[in-house]
Length: 351
Image (tube, rainbow, N blue to C red; front, side, top):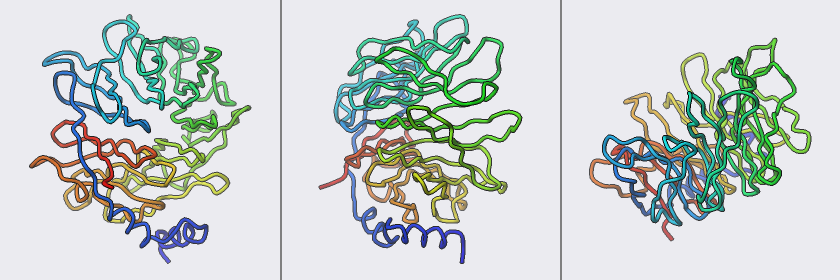
């Protein structure tokens, strides 16, 4: 029996549901499409949406102007620029359901620091670092906890994962090894954190999941794989990511609590499958490259992703435009995607 069939059988045996049932759910859903707009010029790079369909990302403020972080209102209305630490550049990476945005912003003299805005993107706070000149916040939960990475000293090539708590306004390094290189990429409302790490003398990079209060790194890896990346975590603590193999193929994986890491059962004719986001209902979005034409297409799938479906078949777009990447899906099933025309699009399931 093939690896894909074994995985599908395993998922069925634990009550995830059959591929045919999940396929029916995904392919029967059509979407209305809304252009999220721009600050003045393209390209627009959409990054994430929350459960109110507020969207954060990046856009030039005008022709030949620097790229600026933005935040929209509910349902992608009224895009506006985000504040910056030094007035030059910022890069938002995530937001929560209160409209708190985190990312990185230049601080001058070659440095950059993690930042956190207030609710609805108002105001900005420098989160500092761990002894070096660089830090970046990559995710934030609804409790105001942010995670990312930071230099431990200006002379160190390594960075440490951190957990920042807005209540105590403290940045806490994570990981058991002082000599490690680690990055925390996602956090849910239970405070469960996931990311990647390497702990000397072992140079291999693995995925970690860590839970409060001790945040001990629990390692995960698949045989003969490299280049792990963590992209999402749902409210139940299911972690999403992707990894490469020795045949230059990129595949996505799930880590389920108490069940280990499992490769998603995506079609074998794709050279690349990058899953970016998963909601509580198990809907997954991302982008895939078909080995036939190597053209990127945004996709949606359910459960083990054996029903991977091209989003372009489920939505009506401007003539000549294709959805090339789906970056985020919220609890209502709305999807944030990038178009081949360098626009950002909000897809809302039809009733």
